[in-house]
Length: 130
Image (cartoon, rainbow, N blue to C red; front, top):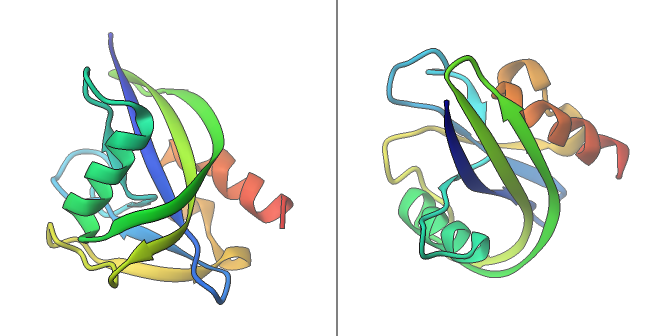
């Protein structure tokens, strides 16, 4: 079974809202929402991958972030290990550079049902820790 290491960013704005991105590309998770990010390359640290992915997906440069939590999730066809970062500062406004919709959601209104299965524990931790 394939195993991927992923870095994901939890962008928090000054009003306490969190950015989620629509999942595109067909497949079983098309139309669900996720915290933006992607696979960590063989020659990258998780922080380097996070910065690269958020630049590619959202057109932003991360200027301040902190590790939040790591988790491992087993899907039917793959295993993902995800390192989540709280991104507190960035340059420019995020835009869906790959055609994906973006939404700013108040932390307490994040709905685990709308998000990828691997993101559910993160939603619970964000709501509990705030």
